[in-house]
Image 1 (tube, rainbow, N blue to C red):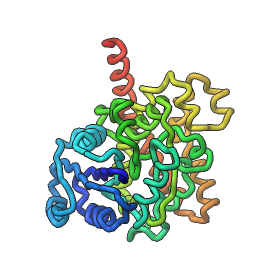
Image 2 (spheres, rainbow, N blue to C red):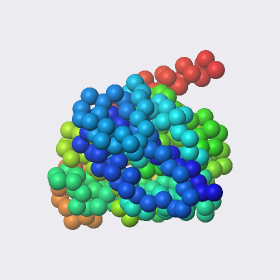
Image 3 (cartoon, rainbow, N blue to C red):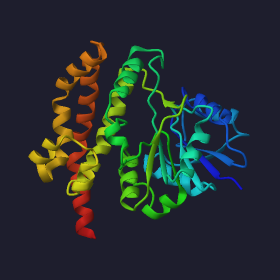
Image 4 (cartoon, one colour):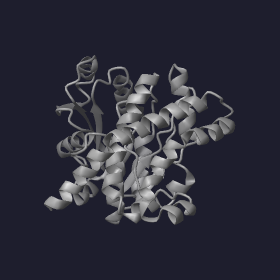
Length: 317
């Protein structure tokens, strides 16, 4: 008997991309004797998403949530899932033909969680913004060799895990409603002793934002989520060591290592200059600065509220 697999897609007004996402999932291959279901968790989308979902009605199961947070939507999807392996596919992602074959093979090699690197090809999208984002992701730290080795975190775009992991760590955070729920989940799984593997799959990637306003909105949301990461793990030295910054960072900041991402964002223009030289793309510099400043702004907007949230939780426990 093969594996049972639940593929979950979170949807909220993703009408421009979700059709391509679902098509790639439906057309992907499976190992022999593998059972699969496709679940879309839709936050009552008001764009063309309902029409697109209707076209796939014989291939998918649609359930609804109230759009009150990514973690809540993930938990809702998993609670409805019948498979023992859960695979999330963001509604702006494409999966390659052999995506699930490669993922399931990695589980057979001892993984408890599988993080599929979502780096897009350079010719993705139809705008210069999408191309610049694709370049940035190729030079980012998230999937560098340093962070892949002895992995502590998992990226949410194309993450997969055994359902037992979800049950053990208590699911995804239900507050805040922003991103970085995946980083929090992966770290808690790692602390519980589960193994995270990282793989690349031909044809599997996350589509970048096409317009600068979309990018800024995304980065601000990520920054708000990261503010809660800072507040939650500010006293957890093991968490910040998982980022494997330079030894000088830990030596100089010590228990305040959580401040480094904020400092790095403030000085992002310096890194932008180096990126421009490395990539040979002058336009990377202003793009990188806008990207990081939006992320920093998101952190600063939410940080006080995030600290208050975790202080109040500690006092009430």
